[in-house]
Image (tube, rainbow, N blue to C red; front, side, top):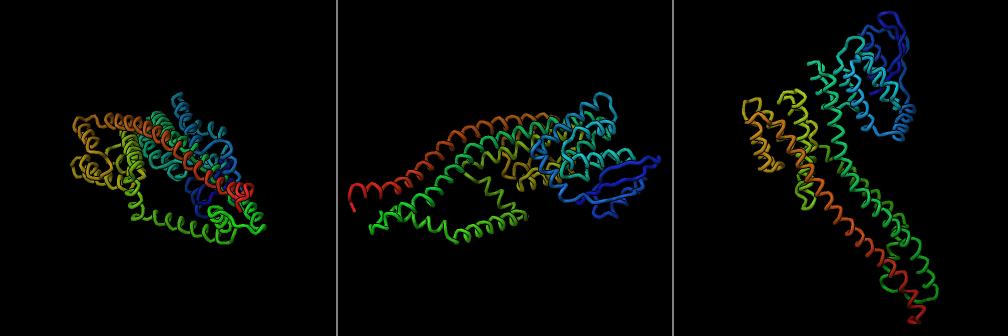
Amino acid sequence: MPRYHYIAIAADGKKMKGAIAAETSYAARKQLRARSIHPTSVSEVGLSSERKAAFFSILSRGGRGQLIDFTKQMATLLNSGIKLTEALSVLMLQVSDVRFKNALTDIRDRVVTGESFTDALGDYGDYFDVIYVSMIRVGEVTGTLAGSFSIIGNFMEKRQRVESKVKTAMVYPVILIMFCLAAIIILTTAVIPKIGEQIRSTGRELPWITRQLMNVSYVLKSAWVLVVIAVIIGIVWGLRWFFKTERGAYLRDKFLLSLPMFGPLIKQRVVARFASTLSTLLGSGLSMAESLRVVAEVTGNVLMRRAVQQSRERILAGADIATPLRDSGVIDPAIAHMVAVGEKSGELEMMLKNISENLESSTDIVIERLGAAVEPLIIVIMAAVIGVIAYATILPILEVSSGKF
């Protein structure tokens, strides 16, 4: 949605500046007038400004980290007795990302005019997701806004740590593969063709393996490689479009969960995310039905989302939530039984928290073991490929020097 900078006159006659998100400049002016603010100037934020802001925010600190810092600082300020509008004004001065700063400015201005803080946050879904907004709504209604910010901050920080572990485990294999592929391409396209042409210029025949690598080199340096790249890009684009559909997303998630090595790891992450999110939402004071609605939107797995939606329907009908979870095929029967026990005993929140912690601990162990197994395997495969290329490069030289031609 486009953003507009505005200069306006507030209801008390004071001049004010800020930013607002709207479909058109007319819609922006209409929103301002609805808040008893009379705009004198409304101008759209240029794309260049937005891109510069995004570029510098990437250089400084990631969006997730910035949001976590904002959330935890809000909790600290509100716990200190500072008013919401004053806390927003203080944190606006510390934000380096221009786009996020404009969002906070608009949110602060709307709260000042009496609009709900939750409604203002909901208009900035790029920063505040449905979990964030739902938990803030509970805090705003119950008067425990500082506690809600504290819970959200801890929840986001914990999720970031889990995601960072997975990303960190992937860094070394990815870098290793990139360097090996670069070495393979250089040897195949630059080294082998020169050696092959020099030997062919003498009228001698190249070894079979060298001839095959030279054929690969010709393909890589010809226009056919562009055709191959275009086909690959087309396939990737088509798959991305298909996976955005309900059917495609279902087939993708079902396939991922059925993978022999990575399927159990993905399943554990999905269930841990479900348990952690639901436990946090219930702990913030959200009702079971509303918590399940929010979890269904952010679960990230179609099979789990359908199971959660069925559980919500059963809750509204007065039944239990464990049966649909057990029938989904994502949650193991033992975990579904633990959920049922927690539901019957009234300790569902604590049970979900324990499930989440146990699964995350188990996931860490699986990731470490996979990393320990995958890294040597990649090294062996890449070493074998580079060894074959090196052999094909040296073999004709050795045969020439030994006089076998």
